Amino acid sequence: MQAEKDTEGDARERTEDGELGEACENVCSESSYHELYSSDTAQFVTENDGPFDHHDVEDPNINVGIKFQNIDCFRDALRQHAIRKEFSMKYLRSEPSRVTAKCADPDCPWRIHASVMHDKVTFQIKTHNPTHTCSSMNRRGTSMASAEWISNKIVDWLRHEGDIPISHIKKRLQRTYGLDNVPYHRYWRGKDKGNFKIWGSYEDLYALVPSMRAELLKRNKDSIIHYTVDDVDHSFQRFFVCFKASSSGFINGCRPFIGLDGCHLKSKYLGSLLAATAMDGNSGLFPVAYAIVEGENSSSWQWFLEYLHEAIGNVNGLVFMSDRGKGLDDAVKIVFPQAEHRACMRHLYKNFKRKYPGEFLERLVWSAARAYTPQWHAEFMRQIEVVSKEALNYLLAEKDHCWSRAMFGETARCHYLTNNMSESFNAFVGDARFKPIIYCIDAIRQKLMKIMHNRRIKAQQWTG
Image 1 (cartoon, rainbow, N blue to C red):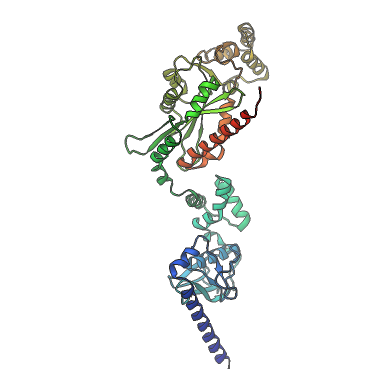
Image 2: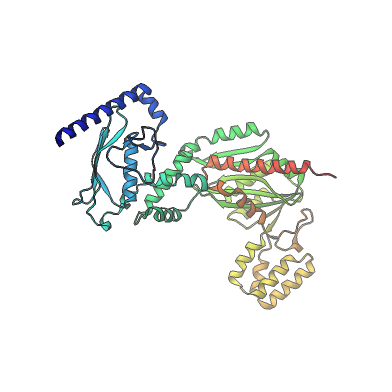
C-alpha cells in the first residue's frame, strides 16, 4: 500500500511538473523568461507560492520541492544557506541539468540534490537530508564566502556609501555572518568585483577620456581642457580642466590670490588631484582649475601651471599660497616667475616644531607671522633669536617664501596665513576621489555647476 501511494505521489508530481512546464512555455519563451528574471535580480520560489513569489535571500528555504528560477539562483541560495548555518560543502555533481552537494565532512550525512524541470530553466530540490553530525568547529562556512558572494553582499554598501575600507567590510560581514579566517585578498577581490558591478571596467573607462574632453568642450565653449598619454605605452597620464566660467570669474570677480594643493585619489589606479582655488568677493570658495595626474612632482605641477597660465594669463600682483608640495616651488618659479609665493604657516610650523618644540617658541613664531609691520616682525624674530639662534636660522632660510603678513605684497590684500581654502576644496570634492576617472571628473564638474548656480540665484536676490 505504501508503495502504491508513493507511485501515485510520483505520478502526481510528474503531472504537475509537466503542467507547469507547459504553462511556462505558453506564457513566455525561454529568452523572455531570462529577460524578466535575470540572475542579477532573480530569487527562488516555492511550488506552493507559484513561480514568481520572492523569498528571503538572507535565509533561503531549501526544503524538498522548493523551486528556483534557474541554476544560478539555486547555487546562490545553497551557498547562502551554508554560510548562514556555518558549514562547508562540496559539489559531487554540478551540471546544467542537475546539482548534487554534500557536507565537506566525509562522515556527515548532509546531502542535497536538485535538477532542472520540464521548462529546462526552473530548478527544483528533489532530495535533501538536513542532518549534520559533524561538529561546528569542523563545519565553519568560511570557505563558502567566495569573492563573488562578498561582492553581492557589499555592492549596495559601496553604491550608497562610496569607498569602504577593507577592514570595515571585514568587521561588518563578520558581525552579520560570523565569518572567521577569510583571507584579506578575498575581501579585496570581493570589493573589486563590487566596484565593477557599479562602475564597469576601470580600464574601459580610460578609453572614454577623449570623448569626455570633446563633450566638455562642446558644452563649455572656450574652456581649457587637455589630456596627455604616456609616450611609451600610450596609457592615460593626465587630465586638466578649467571651465570658461571659472577662469573669467576669477579674472573679473576674485582677488589675485590662488591656493595650490594636491590630494591623493582613492580609486583602483590611484593618482593625485591637483587644484587651484581662489576666494570670491564674498570670501567664498571659488575653484579655478583642477587636474588628475599620475602624482605630485615637479613635472606634473609644471604641466598643471602651464595650462593654468593659458587659462588666466598674466594677472597683476598674482599670489600663490601652498604647503610646499613636492616639485611645486620650482614649477611656480618657471611658469609664474613674477608671482608672489606664500607659504602656508600651518605646514611651515608643523615642520618647525619637529626640531624646535615648545609653547613659548610657538607663540613667538605665530606672533612673527601675524605681525603686520616690519618693525613688529623684527621684534618677534629678535625674541626667537634669544631663545634659539638655530630656530631663527631655520626661519630665515625660508627667504624664498612669504610667511609673515609683514612680507606680503599690497596687490592681493588678504591676511590669510594658511592654505585652508585648498583644504576646503579637498573636502568639497568628497567622495569623487573614490570614483573612476570619468566619474571623478564629471562629479567635480557637477559640484562646480551647483555651487555657481546657487550663488547666482542668491546674487539675483541682493539689493543695492
